[in-house]
Image 1 (cartoon, rainbow, N blue to C red):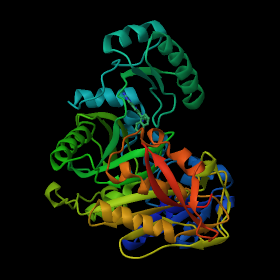
Image 2: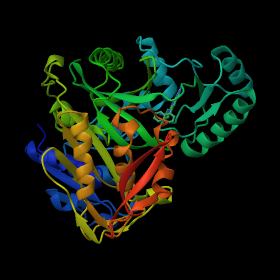
Image 3: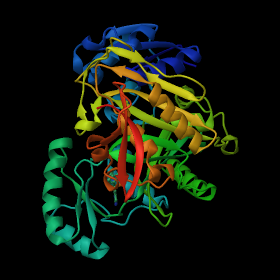
Length: 480
Ligand code: MV4
């Protein structure tokens, strides 16, 4: 096992990895930029080194120099920043440092969405019907669209996460969408390559977590339901998915394992699928990093994914067989962002003036926030993650609602009112969710145009009567 690893990240995920390393008897080493100098991840690490200004977490040369100077054996990239940068993974390897993640080649393959699709289709994985490669002009796109049938979706090969995507219901929209997506992809990724897919209407986003060692063993750890998203930003995730039966889980798991084996994948990874109303699932993308929402899988499987990433990277064989993996109970995660759901999720950076964190049975809080902590405008706006476990979905929902109610975060706006509204929504409680959930029920409007019916006189909480599908129901939301 490693003696010392460096965590090339900040915030809650840096602390998450520090915790795993400490428990494994590994010395965790932090890096930090100027504005993060007093951050909790720096205080809790055994050693910490500056990597300069705001962009320091992306400075590959400087991070590797720190690693070389302080006998670092391995680097954990967390998520974001350098986590899916094949060049960085390769540089680590060339400098004799273990990158805690898959090989540079695997990152590269999955980073190219067309190549990823092609590789997995060849391995026998069902992918969404589309152009079998990159399209270079509108005429070709129109021909392919006629063949697969409208509506179609224009996607960027270098994309992912929904950037550079356009829906087209006819040829006219396709030509416009093709042009728009090309220039958007060029600007965002420096690569304007475009491909086409049949557009699936209102699917669920269901992803499968896998773990693979260096000896060809791959297991799946069930699924996560991630359909509650706004502008391709996940806000609330759960495991298992209310839509997935044991049989479907086995099918999706087998496909995910087959795919991982086909590309020689190692470490922790996630295969994203779209699941349609007929329970058909299609591969969409593979994420080659630990994901923000990994904790819901940890709570229902009892397996520490970050520790397993470190163990596998150190050359240890997987400690679990597929039959050892059991799903127990239900877990929900709410992302607490410094964004104002009452003002179209406008970022709300600033200093937390008042902070009280909830607790109790079945709750996990992954955050570096505290009273006096400042959410910086330069980095992502996540304050932390609340993850609630329950024996079943109802208990997990009730527990999450209770903990959101206990949470005090003063001085900045947060996504707490959004989560409370979703958790009380009858469709959500019925497990009836898909990627159109927020739009279909006008959740954002519900929060900002609420009609107060009962003001209990306290300054923080009010009850509102909301009308959904001709039904009135009452919700409590924090005052916006
Ligand atoms: C799709 C799709 C429907 N059909 N592809 C969005 C993010 C990117 N990873 C791919 N996405 C989608 N791809 C086909 N062929 C619908 C979406 C999509 C979506 C997917 C997952 C979660 C939320 C979403 C919201 C809108 C669209």
